Amino acid sequence: MESSRNEAAYLAAVLSQKNQDDPKESAIREKISATVLRDEWARAAFARVRDIQVAYLRDVVAHVADAEYVHAASQKVLRDIVEALPSQIVEGRETLESLPKAKPVLVATNHFGAYKLLGINPKEELGVDIPGYTDMYPFPAYFAALNPVAKELGLGLYYSSNDFPGVFGEIHSKSGFIHIPALKEGRTAALIEQTKQVVERRPESAIVIFPEGTTSGKPTGMGPYALNSFKTGAYVLAAELALPVVLVAQYFHPSEGFKLKIFSATIPPKTDKAGYEALAAEQQRVMQEWLSAQEK
Image 1 (cartoon, one colour):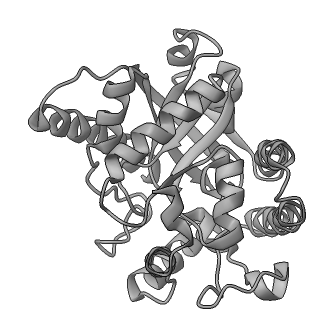
Image 2 (cartoon, rainbow, N blue to C red; image 1 turned 135 degrees about the vertical axis):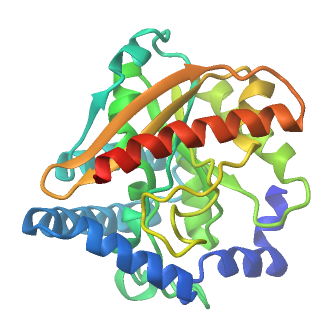
């Protein structure tokens, strides 16, 4: 699968996933903006985060040959983002206290798309010209808000997402992040193998996963806290590798920052399709109830 990342068909598949001209993408971005950027404080904080990410990407593009440098810079930028745009655990800290420190976990969270407010032009702002890739959502802000969970557990913070084209895919991998292959053939096996390699190479890892598979509210045209159904892949992955799944909801307060609710931490048992679907549906249900209560 890795060798295919340089092939034309694979690159085309990656770029098709990054298309920001989709009407549903534009619609959810507008809804997120209306939800998040209501206060001057939030607008200023997001502007700072955008600047932080542009500086980070310029730096790692220049040092892409040095994997350790890229990894260290990627961990640092996650901390820098949370300093500029605070995130705090407001409920469920006792769940983390029950887990062993410095042991790998998966963090399952809602796909809150605030990062969509931070788009940049790779060619104009980073000097990276990839034909067909004129709008980029920088990946650190996809999941930086989960940093307090990793810090509480004494772990580094990583995540799993759709792949990125060209040098950005290379940076993604050297950062220790997991890419979901753009081509469906062998996708589950590739994800299990990548995750296994990450936790073997860096066992002190909290890996953020998004069970919805796409931005909350995007497929339905609803708001950013309207959860999509949870897919089962993350739970299959956790069961196969015997990793705890820590369920965490993200809610953004426009004058304070991210609020995190931690629900549970369980290692899913190996089961059949119906068993995984039941677990995914229950986790989606409890998270949706909490998010809906926050909105009210």
